[in-house]
Image 1: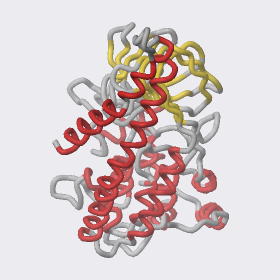
Image 2: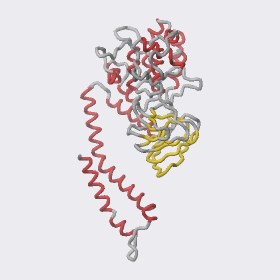
Image 3: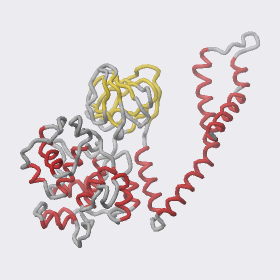
Image 4: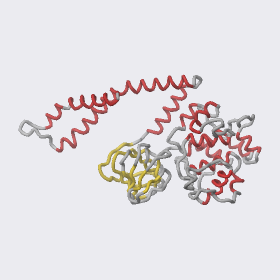
Length: 392
């Protein structure tokens, strides 16, 4: 209510302040404002004054909110290094927002994109993929409607060329470019976020040497969002059970939407109680749906022997907090892997989970994998010796 009152007052003051500008736009003999003035002069002037006054009006409220948030964080978890968390959040924010371009198109307007770029829209924004390849992007649960085909599309689904897609919610849904270049026609408000630049390729190399992260035939694709199926495969490898999964002969269990290469993994995981899919009634595992940091951390905690069952160690909604409380990751590290979540962060979490101790045991996850012959000790030693970085 307070924000609404401030907004109304701000707009009223703005329009009052524009009285001289409205008057000067015409003349004594012809007081009507010209179309040229409305199109070329007034909008930039209005935009600048709104921005300037909004900044002045909202800055005290923003500063107060930050102060209250920091106070709450310290009161809930007194031993957290607040400075480290703030530094990590600032670094991540600057990385993610560098070069972001915002725009508005009154009608379908071509936008040239490169691999890894993400086009995001607000409710009602339309996209038409004119050439190249793209997939629907956004957090789990985001919805894009294929108006041409009359169906909804979830994150991870391939965007069909020449069909009109409409953003249907406020979650930040859009398109991620998968080809070297692509042209997407846009109408409505949108933002174009340049391709994410991976930072943990050295950790990916180390995991690859240990045969825990294999990538794809065309590379690691660390700039891409991880899927549920990819996350499940990583969990099975970290459990040291990939050989058993690949030998599983009973198909994908009750799930009808799993690609051939993933069927033994999903079927094995279902038989072991590691996954229940997204809808047993409909036979859906949703292999291409994007996985969140909390969901992936849940997989890691399971690999470390912790349980998220009702009578277990943690609730999956609090997986990240539990990982900090048990010193598996620091608060600053958790801050670095918040959304948007990429395969790059999957690599980071997976690599450092190897040095975490198993629940109730004096050995690390890596030691357990070596003991179970899932990882070669010599390969692990060489791979980890090649990594030279400091954890936040």
